[in-house]
Amino acid sequence: MSRTSRGPATLTPASVLGSGAVVVGALILGFVGASSPLVVVASAGLLCAVLAPRPTIAVAVAWIVLCRVGGELVSTQVAGATVTEIDGLIVLASVSGLVLRARRGRLEHHGSLLLLMLWPTWFVVRTLVGPDAEGFIQVAPLVDLRYVAAFAIAPAVREALLRTPNPQRVLVSAICWLAYIACALAIAGRLLLELGLLEPGRYSLFLVGVDATKEIRPGGEILIPVVLVFALRGDAVPVLGRRWIPFALVASEIVLSQTLSLLIASVVGVAFAAGIAGRGTTLLSRLGAVLALVVGVVLALGVVDAGGRFNLSERVGQESAQYRFHEIDVISDRLRDDPTAMLIGAGGGTMIQFDGIGEVKRDSHNVYASIAWKTGLVGLALFLLPFLAAAARARRRGRLGGSVMGGFAAIGVLSFTVPFAWTASGLVGLSLLVVLSEFLDDDPEV
Image 1 (cartoon, one colour):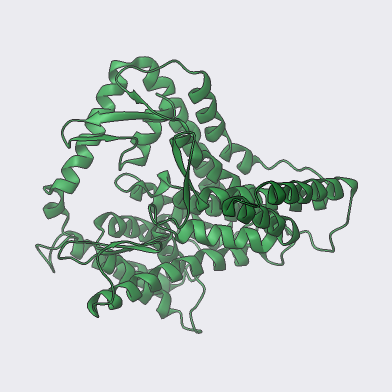
Image 2 (cartoon, one colour):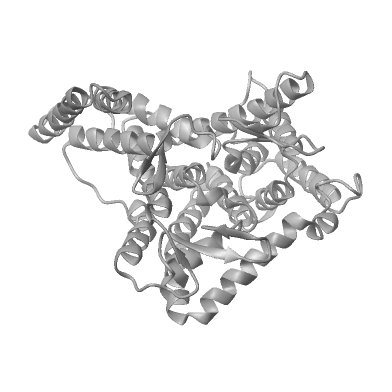
């Protein structure tokens, strides 16, 4: 069954009034903020959102996904929290989605997107009206609540795709190319580092490690294991007409990132490609999946490089792994000491003193622990619900559905040790998979 609605958009009173209100608001902001460059830029952005909503959504999603946390280009202080261009782009994408909805002139309800909004709603309500939790340090709640807005990308992306021919392939292409760009940035960063043209440090599009490993960590890494699954199942977009290039790009990025968690997540995603979600794959794809599994296991067991960063037994004993365990222990103790906080969370803007690592932090490396800390077990269930529902729906939607399911599995494993899904970039990446599950073909053989 086709989910595409084609045909020219029609002007309705709602669309005229909605677009006109945004334009007038943008002009007012422009006049009032003539002396403020940021307000002028915001006004121009609103005009773009109204006049060119689809390109605005595309640009916003691309930069949000690819920009590294801490590498934002613009920042200012609002209510005790640092607000960056990422927050502005989320707003512009949301406005663009509303403009497209107004042009269609009708309101539709979609179960998966409604489920996606349950956790953000609960997080806001808990932060505003819930009781103070013991053992937590309270700071400005906007520090955490800003990530809630990232879920607003999903309705905007869906609106942009509604009148697009073959929206599932368009979205798969977007996900693949964002991952390819991230891989290319990692490769370019390593070349520049070796040539002496780049110093270790944090940049907008990648992080260059300061230790001897020379690790390169681009933005958009959350999509790397997802695209590996797509490639192994024959769903990834070829590069220059060659299907082996995506494998080379993804493998290069994993090696350059020197991230064991990324390797393990990729292995889990590949396991789904070869087994649990293996319906519709070719023999060649299954053989490629098995080979990738073997390589991943060999690296994790330290057979090739016993002292390397991919050796699981070696890494578990290192400081980076130990403070991850310490974070979970401290969060668990705080929640056990306060049964109310365990149930409904401590709310946004709370921090914890981690004595074992000498830091006061507002989150942890374990995404599930961070969500339970902020929103309790109720919030954790609400957070997981839309992704589990999307994965279950994808399993019934043919070969590409199996790839989407494998992508969710990979991100689920990655979130135990890497906080990608506790960033705007990661939440947008997850939202793209949820939207993709909405547009999957009903034919189970595809």
